[in-house]
Image 1 (tube, rainbow, N blue to C red):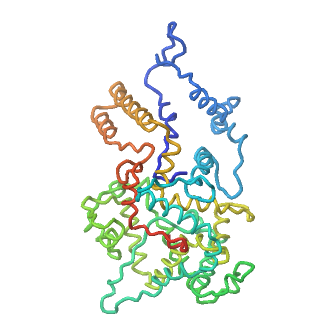
Image 2: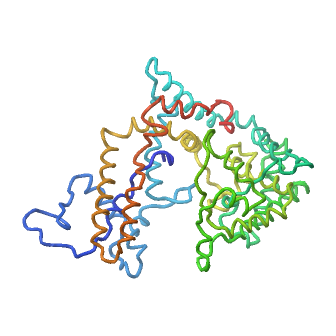
Image 3: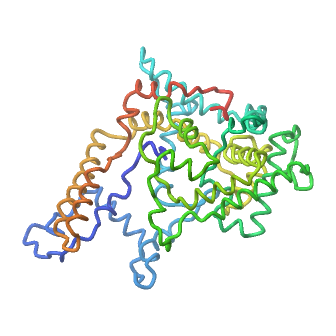
Amino acid sequence: MVSAKIQFLVAIGVALGVVQAGPINNNHGNKGPSLNNKAICTTPHCVTAAAGILSDMDTSVDPCQDFSKFTCGGFYDKYEIPAGESSIGSFESMEKNIMPVLRSIVDVSYGKAPKAAPGDVASHKNLKKLQGFFWSCMDEAAILKAGRKPLANEVQKIINILQDPVDPLSHVLGVSGRGLSLSSSYDYEEKEPVKLLTDTVAAMLQIILEDEDAANRTQSLIPQDVKQEWVDAANEVVEFETQLAGIKSYNPDSPFPTQFNSPCTMEELNALTPSIDWSVLLQTALPAGINNTRPIIVRSSFYLTRLDAILQKTSSRTLQYYYSWMLIHNFANYLDLPYKQPKAALDKYLSFFPTNDKIERLSTCIQAVNNNLGHMVGHYYVLEAFSGNSRKKAMAIVDNLLLSYEKNFPTLAWLDKATRDGAIKKLKGISKLIGYSTLAPDVESAKSLDEYYKDYVVSTTDYIGN
């Protein structure tokens, strides 16, 4: 899929299917097929789309008895989840269909790669960046040769940080409410996933931080081979993460609804969680030169106060181990297999993949380029796949949809004036992200993309660095 940077209008048919207040008028005269006095589309595209929807249904089933089978029974019969994947659906089918186009953009060996026009410096730089990233991913020999070093260097930046004994706040630590290692908070109440996670954390810490023999192993590191130092560190990490999983961030029955989704100033945030310097976190997260002056929405003040209580009693060393594990957890998949075997086993357990499944390297690398340089990939995808004024047509559909909502709201007797006015105000405030960005950056402009990615340095020999 062309990342979140290219938004496809897949569900527009569902949105258009909103039930209107009032009965259907079946008196159509001699104007041909119609519904609600609107002509029914009979073009090949409409007929094909309708046939696809019907083929995914099972109309022999009573929807009151089994609505899932009624709406998706045909789809269930036609498809099976492919090996190495956790789901299948419209988006997965779309991704599969556009994969050849993406490959033709990034894979020079495919023989269809676009070329920059003479003198078009921006396009030349963009293509070099895209294709260099792809090659760095496909060069498995170089990835194996690099071993654990690229990731170990990053982990050492965390492990080797020492607090200033005079001013311990000189190194600020922060924790996100998301990103648990296991699939859900309930998994931390079960012995099997917790043990597997603990063994994985211990093994991966040892492999990344000190194991020089990982490349020569024919099998994954077993728990008995892991040093006690890393076992102890893993226990600290999992215990800390278990506490995070136990924080209930939302209680729908709470008598204090204002404590959820509440706007807070920076001062109020810092008061809720003295252990976290939110100013530093935001300054790091936001682009250079951007200052946040608006209130920040707090999902749950209960969560923040409980989080601070956990941080207050957690040692700096435990937090260092935790952040080291988070870094490994997020980036280990970019290493060669000997350096990620324990993590790969955990991933398969959590995603229910059969143990012999292996995702094709080509697909992995195309997706990696797309995830990191999505706007740039989108530029060439648009040139290849977006015909004529297709974006304008999609924009017109959305505009008409919003207009129909706006016209329909005043006819709904069950909406009071304040609610109706608020709904219309929200409609007019919607940002329409159709097809691809034309602002920051402008996906149609090679110069805009070159400027947008100017600080993104790509090396053909450093996949993790990319």
